[in-house]
Image (cartoon, rainbow, N blue to C red):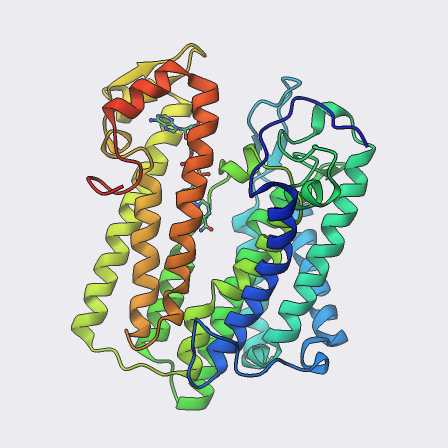
Length: 409
Ligand code: NDP
């Protein structure tokens, strides 16, 4: 196989790093799932006992997962009231994306509510988390292999900048094609914003219902974790959509990692109930609100600026011109640190863990992992911006010296 198109530098430690991550990521997810239900709930150290294959493999779980993916795909194909244009691609074209995610969420919520009121035992989903996670992992492996095969016959213009090195493992991991599609069905956009994120909310809800079955009512801590995470939303113009190809990294991340590890706090609470006093709950709500405010305001300031720099809400902000014709904000949120949206995200992630108390490290896995993810993501973004903007980016870094946390990092 010969590499095609301009090649970006290797990331994630190259082919060896990619191979290691393809083993380590699923292993970590299963470790977390097993540890959350064990008595000591230890984050570090071996899981209590390795599950037998029969505990992992269940045709029923696979069928359930496929039915879920089928339902979400059908909702994706429903006529959308609005289509959004993606960013400009190598060949100057722009892809169209249906904006009907909210519609899909409402229909899913309606179906789930009707099902639950008709006696659907949603709480029983919590007993199937292990086989469901196994089925999702298997699906992600097969899916990324199929995507790789599809990309082998794709023209060079649709390949991702980073995933066409010619190394099989690395390209499967990172994804060879930028926006793999069959007709107008965009696999990356579909997976990024729908089945995994909605499954995360559904698993959280199942854990809440199971807690109510076991203890009479859901705990305040469980309500907070469910409420905060429901509020959290992802945005269309994230880096995954614009830069990364679609391979194992995103397929596994979207279909398995997000629903099964992001629900870790709720899983922990089901097996390790925590009493939370009202003043502490209010303080945690305040922390979440501060994080959410920074996250939303920073993202929307940049998105508004990119869409329409003369919008009154951003027109007065100070900017640096770049050789590309685009400008960089140097005041407002983006003048405080170079990634204020990550700061808001991290503050929220702390609020998601605090309801679980401080007796265990396990529920804080998310903030530890997320800090590492955002620090790495920030470094990748800086490299891309440096390539894009050159001297203007250096000037921005001089004027705004901190990356994520003011005066610290
Ligand atoms: P960002 O929204 O941070 O966008 C980075 C881009 O913004 C840069 O490449 C550049 O692109 C532009 N930019 C950077 N600085 C400036 C500036 N000063 N003025 C104007 N434009 C600037 O990227 P992400 O996709 O990483 O994050 C999106 C959101 O998603 C964040 O809130 C993040 O926290 C969240 N997220 C959540 C994850 C999760 O698992 N929960 C995972 C990853 C992200 P250009 O100049 O080309 O416009």
